Every structure is written in C-alpha cells, then in structure tokens.
Image 1 (cartoon, rainbow, N blue to C red):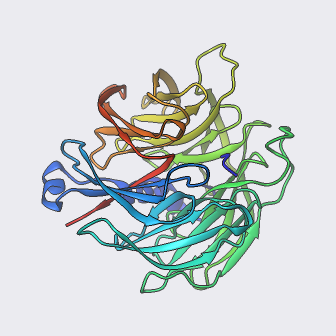
Image 2 (image 1 turned 120 degrees about the vertical axis):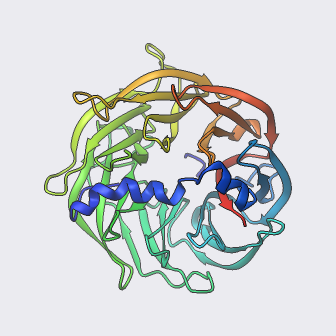
Image 3 (image 1 turned 45 degrees about the vertical axis):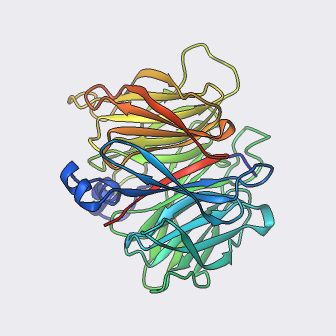
Length: 391
C-alpha cells in the first residue's frame, strides 16, 4: 500500500533525544572534509514507475553537491532505509503487500554499490519503517497494513536472522473509516537505555510503549501510551533536544501534538498545532517530521499542499519546547513523502515522490527558514534518503 517514542523506564528516558540525535549529528566542517564526504542512498517505489530500486550518490557536505552513482541495488519497493551504526550495512523494507520482505546489504564505500546479504519475509504486510536498537544487534520493522511490529537479530556478518518478536498493536480504532479501519503501525524507535521501543499507530491514534529485552530481542506491551486527538493518525515522531518532549505528526489531520515525557506518569499532552495555513481544507497528508540538530526548529512535510512547514521551538521559560509556525515553503514538486536534513545541518533535501526529484533548500540556522538552492536532482519515485559517512 502506497499510503502511506515514548514514556517508560527510568530517568535515562530524558536522554532519549540525545541518544537519537547523537546517531545522526554531524561533526564539524573540518571533520566532514577529513571524512571525505558522504554517500547518499535514495529508496524508491518500483511498482508502476521506471525505478529499479535503491540509488546512490556522492554527497559533499560542504557544498551540498550530489553526484549520481546510479543504481546501487535492484530491489522491489525499498520504501524506507536505515544505515547500521557500524556504517558497513544498509537495510531496506520492501513494501509489497503480502510478499513484503526486509533486505540486508553490504555497503561498498568505494563505488556506492550495495551487495545483497540476505532477504527475509517481513512477517507482515507493507513494512514502512525500519530502525535499530541501541546496540545495533536488532532491527525493528513496522508493518503498516497488518499493524504489527517485528524484531530481527542482526548477525556479525550483517545478515538478518529469524524474528525474535512479532506483536500487533491493539486498541480502539480512530474515526476515519477509510484509513483507520485497522491498526496501522507506522514508526518504531528505541528508548535511550534500550529497554523499550515506541510505536506510532496511525489506525489507533496512539504511540505505544513496548518493553524490549535486548538479551533475547523480545517485546511486551506496557500501559504507557500517547493518545492523540481522534482522527489524527500518528505517522512519525521526533524528540526535543533535551529529551523531555515528543513531537508526534498526525498524518490525517496535519497536526503536530506535543507530549511531555515523564517516566513516572503517562504521556502528558501539552499542545496541538496545525502544520497548514489557516482556512485550508483541501486534501493533505502530512508525511515527515524532524527537529534540527540545534533543537531550535522543527520541520514537517505536507503532501497535497506540497509544502514544508517550519516551526520555531520556543526556549523561554513559560513556553519552553512549545511550537510556533513560522512559514510554509513550497517543495518544488508533488508529494514530499520524506525529507532529510543533511549531515552538516545546512541543507534540507526534499524527496518529491510524484515529481521524480529531490530539491535542496538552504537552512537559515538562525531563523530556520528555507531557501531553494541549486538544480533539482532527478530520481524516479523517491521516498527515503539516508547518508553514510565514508573515510
């Protein structure tokens, strides 16, 4: 289907965002030069398109230049990608209904090519998100259509083993009869101390908490959950720089809901903010959400309005962590399903799925505002982009 973290445990939860950001945070410009730049991989949809699978690019973090390397791996519908913490392996979900799989690849840093290590059944329909536990020993997969999440062990050779957990979200369905007719797991990430995972379920209007036992890779449901406004349809989430707040993107109502994280209490809702212009009622499906590396601004994408919403994250005492919409920036294409802040935090790259392009925007680190720069990068049906540092 082409439709398209968090309260629990101990005070270590407060460090969740720090750990999440640390996995993505770039070094200085000097370090980026020393590293010799980056590889960028783009996941695509291959059904009814000209795409062959995953595409590779050389990416210069200093200039933002993307140099095409061609098809890195031919694989069906690699709609979401994740790079292993050791930077040697890349994993993709292959979103193909009942035939969905998860693929493991070895990265060739010299030419960007991906070598298939193995491919396993997703044990669910239409996987749409993949991530790692903190040790890199397990992969977490969210299956959209079947509403279940699965844990796969990662071997020393990068291959995926037999699943160690397979659980389906349960609860009261949301009011949207077309999109919330069943549980729809859409996002999964681990807690800072690796003892829990958090799952956004679009069909149930919840972000659930599951206990994660790293010794055996098992999951068990606990009571903590973030409850969104009925019909919001949570898709993805982002965490504040200090780890105290979670920002949950509602795909169906184009909202951002803010929850305070306190391990002693259930999720506590603080604010709900629209990611659209006032008075607009045409079709829109919010898609991606991210906080910049300084924790000063938040970004979301709108499919339908074809914009990136830019929010201030207030840091004064009374409004700390709350949001204020600054501007809506046209994406230069149709269906911005995903975007990625580059390793330097200077550029935001938007993948416009139905326009077959990636558009780059300069980020004003002071105001958060975006300015389009350079030419569009052509790639068929782009839906996910990840970076890999290369030495």
